[in-house]
Structures are given as C-alpha cells and as structure tokens.
Length: 193
Image (cartoon, rainbow, N blue to C red; front, side):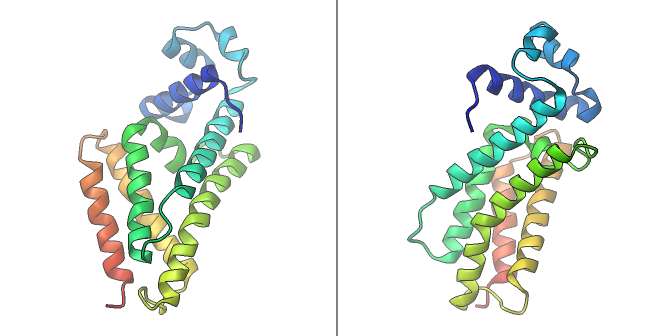
C-alpha cells in the first residue's frame, strides 16, 4: 500500500482524535483543527472520513504483516508466540493512538469498506498466529483439547481486552509488563507440560 507522508500524518491525527473523542469526534473539521490545516487541505488527501479510516486500517494491517513476517523463524512455538505478542505490544506502546482503530467495536459499523478493512486486520493477525499454534499442537507443546481456531479466539480476545484496559486507563500502566504477564498466562493455559 502506497501512502504519502502527509496521509500518514493525517491517519495518525485521526487515530489520536479517535482516542480522545471517539468515532463521533472524528470529523474532518476536528482533524483539520488537530493538524492546524484547513478542511480543504484534508480533502486534498482523502475524499471522506470513511476513506481516512479505511486507509488507516489498511496501513495498520500492511504494517503488521511486514513486521510479523520479519520475526525470527528458527525458534520454538513458545518463543515465536512470545515474539509475536512482544512485537505487537512494542508497536502499540510506540503508537497508542492506533489502539482504538484496531480494537474498537462500532468503528463506523454502517460502512462495508470499514468492516472489510477491520476483517483484513484480523486476518493478518490470524495468518501469523495460526501457524504458531498449529506447530505447537503438532509438536505436543500446546494442548490439542482445544482446536487451533478456538485457541486463536481466546488468545485474540485476551489481547484485545488487555489493550482495551490500557486505553481505558489512559495508557497509564506498563503495557509491556502487563502484556508479558498476559502472554505468559496464555502460554501456561496452552502448554501441555
């Protein structure tokens, strides 16, 4: 996905606006104010609020795919699992303004384009998590009493809840420490040893 530096600035500002004001506060007028632009300057880069949100979500899914594709592959399933979540937590710690966009329910629900972009974000996460879970199950490291699909739903739900708690706490607790504890707990539940 090609995105200009100015478009990246706009979607980052949109993420900050979503974080502070919610979906209803994400307006072209508020974005222009946040960026000290005119509204017409925003419209030079995006046709609508929906275009901004879709571009943001597509950027995030493409970025996650690149980052998660570059994780070391010669590790055990447990180490890969830890590395995947550490990378995601690192990214969100550096970019907390994107937490709402990725983990928000009700993000422009009426938009099929936004829904498709949200599904793309989820599918990227599943694309990288599923092989780790399956490898762990095949090697006997992870439980087979729960299907890999069910494990992914449990894991992604726990991660989403952790990010939600962090956002509601106004990003004031140590997400790396709490995230590490959550990931260790998930491994404890999944491991057969």
